[in-house]
Length: 266
Ligand SMILES: Nc1ncnc2c1ncn2[C@@H]1O[C@H](COP(=O)(O)OP(=O)(O)OP(=O)(O)O)[C@@H](O)[C@H]1O
Ligand SMILES: [Mg+2]
Image (cartoon, rainbow, N blue to C red):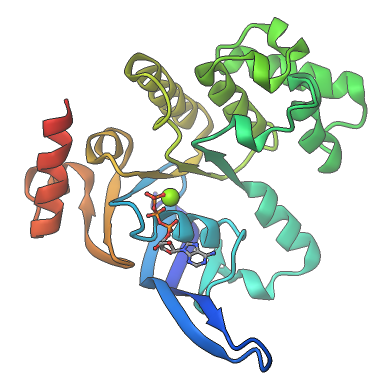
């Protein structure tokens, strides 16, 4: 059976206004961060996005997840333009597309315990009707992501980077997403912890059939995680293809440079 397409990015272009006229508000300068990106994400699959700093990876992820609007082009969620979704459908889309960032600690309120941080999305989305229901779901999820239940009473500042990333994965999974946009999720972690988190993400994908957009500047990591790879340079997708194929037979000089520098690092 053919896989269903969760998200289609249709010719996404993003222009940031970098200078406006002080009085008239007229745009004096803009920067084009993404110059026309198009790709599909199928259920249960991973699309990797690799490229140097500033190439537009995060911008694409944020547009696909609805955190930013494209200047031109559109995002389709199960074939429907997100601009044409009803309020209820839009809420469903935003719930179904979750994020995991490099700096999970920064994305958690330091004044709340992990248990509160995890129960908030459950309560706001009505997945759990009360605290007891939320607690049960949280306990199950913490075990699934390999965390001890004692973490619930800790504050984000009291847990390690790896534990915090596991908690962030738990938070994303609790609302049963279709797609998780993983933006450099292991870049801040030690190499041994990186492997644990990558393998956890893979196991969860097999079990839950979720899709990932996996963003990294490291082509080795992207290759390990992805079914297909998009290589970005200066806001353009300069190469795309099946992960192994791109790594073994890169067509673009830029891709070859990325591969060479990845192997120099190790
Ligand atoms: N709000 C903004 N206003 C103006 N320019 C922006 C804004 N956000 C991003 N940019 C610019 O757009 C370009 C793409 O940024 P983006 O964050 O998507 O890159 P990236 O590939 O994720 O880089 P990194 O690997 O460093 O995270 C960069 O040149 C960046 O400076
Ligand atoms: Mg980025």
